Amino acid sequence: MKSFHDEMLEARPEIAEREAEFSAKIALAMELRALRDAANLSQKQIVTLSELSLEDVQTCESLAGGMPAPDLVAAYRSAVHKHTSLQA
Figure (cartoon, rainbow, N blue to C red):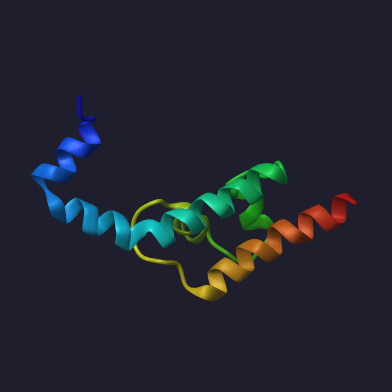
């Protein structure tokens, strides 16, 4: 029996194209969220530790949409690093 996902891909092949297109974005979003979770930080704490807005943080962690600008990603990672180095 085919899964719902497989049936959707068969009925709408453009979805498979979108999935491939967004795989890098999804991987980045999941990586950043895992970093934040490992540091036991909330999105608001990332905002406080960085110069990012809450919207920027949410864009970085979003599984959909375009890739965030490299400087946003760098600031996000820097905030997590700052927090973990303060905890050491």
